[in-house]
Image 1 (cartoon, one colour):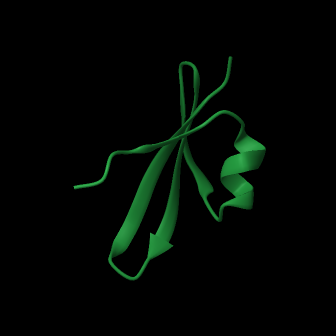
Image 2: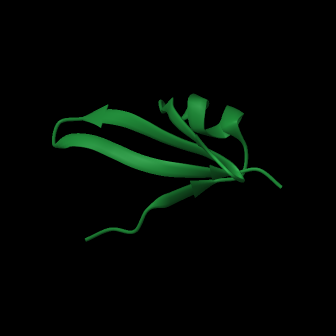
Length: 46
């Protein structure tokens, strides 16, 4: 099973086709629709 993808900026995640799903204490939870369902990733803003 692949690990979760981590982006350093929200712009990087959006460029990769993800959309904002929720806000976290240090960034965002993002998701993208795939043929197998939803792919989840996190954006860690520092």
